[in-house]
Length: 506
Image (cartoon, rainbow, N blue to C red):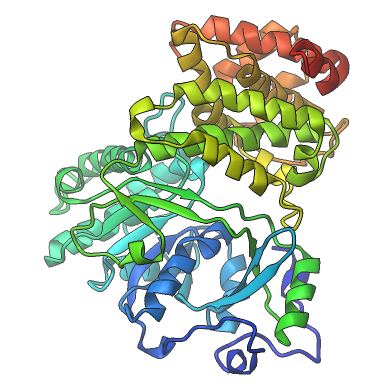
């Protein structure tokens, strides 16, 4: 967050426990006594999405009298959220915006904020607190530190640090493992770990990565009583999977000014979002959980089909809109989606991806895509295409590549899916040229910049990018996929999306 994001006028007081009581009656505020709320959840990665999604659901539960589920928020790197919310006693405004209305609600479920690099011991203490029964995570795909093959990147410097310094961790892996080890030693039951990031089978994926990390830790602590934590995590700790969905664009200074005028008080970091909100969770919480379902959370035995539908239809089309939108000069999703060519492309993309979803899961894909179209057209959100474009190398495997592989295996058409991958490569190459330098970022940026600067033929470029990102690694259809992507890249290089769309009959 920039320095001007926490600047305040001299005439407006800050949102806080004191000032919230004087807000206009039209603004919803916490109806419960926040001083009686007990911390029962630790959340790693307190960003805008968490504050628009899980924290809002928990706020509803607190209002219903479930006061033992307050949230202790943890930032694993930045101080921005803590610096914005702590002077406000953890309060912030959630602005729920459609194209025609805006509803403001003050959320009070975050009762404390910690910054891990400043005081890792305080974070471990919060995780070890017997009152903590659930740990939730929204740390983004790249923070899971996976190697190209999907396993733990044991060579990552932060993983090496946490293995050498288990009591002073940096990563989610290190914090969770150290806290679970301390709880086991103290005879405290383990907390449930609830991943809320867009990873395939996210609970099972995090479980596997944490066991891998703990095995390395066990090997390094051969003479310690902590040995055996990997087996404990493997067999005694619950990792339910979940699927989350809500569009949360970045907050602008214009948003802050508008919210301050409505509140009559300044909020350093309000959160913008849409009316739609979905959370599907596998019901596996040995230590207990809030009664989320009374507020719209879907508790299920298997979240997989819901997750696949969201990843392939929402997230996949979001990536398509982002990269094709950037290449077409559209700064926001609603403007890109209003482009007739992109709109037609998204419909065709959905038609390719829908057959890859399980037929027997009871998914209503027609209703879902109709709802997506309405959400993408929401002019109030101004969801930036550059924001969605970040971290493509981490997102595209589950959003696009998985569907493309399944189409190839089934012998069905996939020309639209492969254009999305080509558009990502072209958008990366356009930074510093037709797009601003650093307009969006990727964990592989250094290598991508060097590779794309070589001006190799399209097929060689795509092959090198697939090698770098690990797309379709070792799959029998990998070369076919590369060739299909390369055809689109030729068109994009020659005349941008116009020629690429024309080749598809758009």
